[in-house]
Length: 498
Image 1 (cartoon, rainbow, N blue to C red):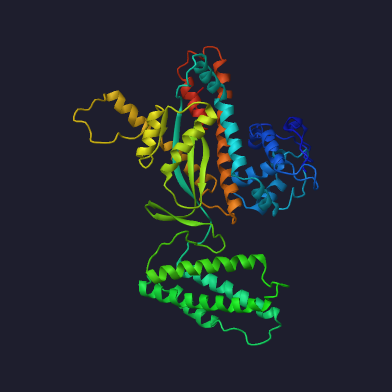
Image 2 (cartoon, rainbow, N blue to C red):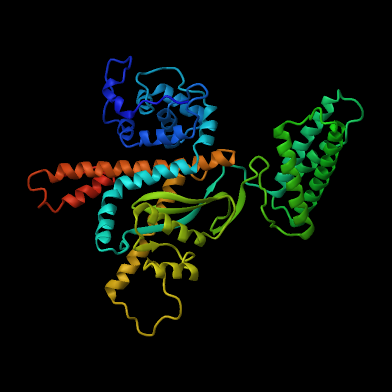
């Protein structure tokens, strides 16, 4: 059950504050509030909740506004609530009618909010943003083809690429993973022994000896393969022994009347058993890989993803298949397992058609995407791709200078999507996802892409506003510096002349 008031009912001049001066209408949070699709999000958010049962929940504008503030300012959950508590512009942004010094909600609710708002909801909002920019031109383009009873002609450019959203975890090693698993099993043994009122002999874990041995090992530098293998053998023996002790102690509760371990400890026990099996298999085969390898017992869904980049050969997080459409980014695929990104091309092109009603004229991608299957698919639909043709190069170059320059320019335009990845990782911490659960991490990542689209949409409206002003000036259409002026305005630079 949710109570929601439309955004049309609130303006910055009606916001009540205890201060003598009024709030400025040109503040960035006030301007951004005019861009955010509050009503659309409210309909999606309320459809996911029961409208009759339960007490009234938080306003959808309050929920989305808090998420936007959190990621724009790169704050943690508690810091976001404290920032909103002190800033009247932020309180107006989230839909409050007057300034308050009380927390808008408890910071722990961010976890439940991220569970409720998933990737699908943010993807619908991104589609709505793209439609608001290109919807009129798409309808006009598609209508011309419908009048001639022909399928719509291809139009537009689609840039595609893949990246990894790193989870904020310690760089995993086999010995650290095994040592953490050992300590977690020792916690379970201590708990089970205390529940039996410390009756009988406590199972031996040799924790002091292994703690001392691991401390000496961890202080060493440039460890040899023999030293690593020796420590892994000791830790595997301890984990195997501790698992056996835990299972024996749990057999005493076989009547089913009471199970001593909580759901959290049961989950850890299942994860540690899986980790032991994987590490024992790699130890016996002297291999460094195994299917569905776990690198963190606290986030067992995280997988190592080989990227082959200089300085960062392996990344730990989710792999993202991303497309760029008119400067707006869409998250087409989010996978926690490594995969070949060339399999995303067909899905991304079809998603472009579903949104615009026609196929793109050009697909800009790197050299991993033009496989034979993808080339055949694109050729059947008369879609070009920035990739050299298969086979030997012809003896005589049939392309002239202008065609060669056009192909080179189209290939260089693909760098725009690399810039989006840099914006997400440097500006909004896309490479430091702090959520622990799988669902909350996916919501965190999707929210970052949604915010980048909001910032892009705000710039589009800002540029269009200045364009209207300058074109209305006398003699502006004859002024050659108008385009240069609009370019500098769009980049946020200061101008010396007008």
